[in-house]
Image (cartoon, rainbow, N blue to C red; front, side, top):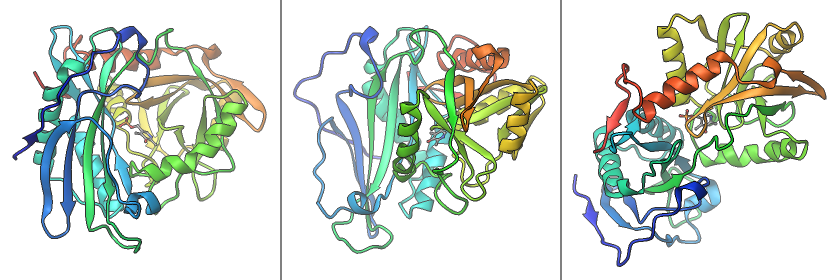
Length: 354
Ligand SMILES: *Cc1c(COP(=O)(O)O)cnc(C)c1O
């Protein structure tokens, strides 16, 4: 695959790694390519990072045809840079694209693009504890017409942002509010696709939770508001009476790569792991009788995020004395060990860039 390179006149100074937040600073270059129905993907290029020029009638601005991915490049102790399970992101983006009638990118081409782009920007991968280079591949419908139909033109871009450690002050458990009004997704909808619209629809509940002093919401299913689905923009897991339970992928839940990795680690180590329906009733009962031992969210940004308190209709339940539990800690240590190349990768999950 040919990727044109347009050199930047000047390169930016790298930021002080101790001041990195999330997604505010961007690297020198971005990858771009365009698609149309007649010619397919074309004009693959790495160009200086900068503004886009978009037609005011562009599909994405009106009808929300937008999907994205999120993954990180990690700086290993030996100085090399690696990705974590990039093929999973590539496949998931193609599944999201299929749902939104956006074009598919052949897996081998996508991996070549990720590899060449990260190799170009690898100097932006910071090396301080917990830091990484966050990659944001995204695609949007870009027809210059207000007609509503499957897109005929699309653009795919990858941008890169050096990000700080998620846990600067140690892993502090978060307080979560169970949302029983708004829903994130419904079966048959776009819940399993990583699309921008799911986030737009989630913001109101997130705002309300924050006003009440909670950091995220726990989503219930959109049909009966009876089963647990996800927490904020993370998947969720519980340890109830020795059993690790995570909601099964019914179509309205995002199939997280961290979720999948946690399940694989725990299964290989002999834990009793179930992907099944978990009702709010079962969960509140386990919280009341003390059989809920641990709860945590999981996603690329935080890896795992322990839940110290759950609130449902003004009833507050403290979990594991508001402290991180042993399984949550173990998952954090195992996954971050593999991601930053500190422990042996027995699973073959890492992909070396160089
Ligand atoms: C991205 C995302 C996740 C986590 O997926 P990872 O692949 O583990 O990062 C979970 N839920 C939602 C809604 C997401 O968008």
